[in-house]
Length: 199
Image (cartoon, rainbow, N blue to C red; front, top):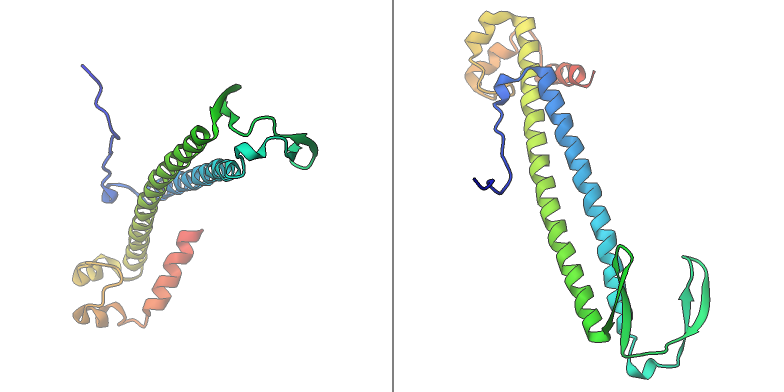
């Protein structure tokens, strides 16, 4: 039987995870986001090199034959040389292989490379944005769980049942007076919650 193609999506019920597991999941997502960003930077550098090569071809014409140019030996060392053939160039296609193409063929090669890399960058950035959205959602859920634990510890389970928490930062007017009836402000709860989360 042929293997199914495409990404395997694993669904995780956040409410089934404890606080350490939630933090571990967020850290894993953050690592993946950094990896995607590093990959996109590497691809962008490669794309720039191909684009620069394509731009240089604009200066190569049949009239260029015999003209003196500076041939790079390293990034900061050059020797003078002459263009022997203004109709074709030799391309490094990777892994030690070189091919000779006419100028128009070389331009087409570099344009295709630039387009292909741009498509890969778009895919990587899309994955990065999806992971970032998941990471923010997990952090919001993690914070709400921390706040609920703090509230239960301070007010007890009976107060929790009475409030019927729909969201830890609820603005429901009927519950607001109960939340702060002992003088604990929203800011104080939030500061204690995020302080514990950072430890």
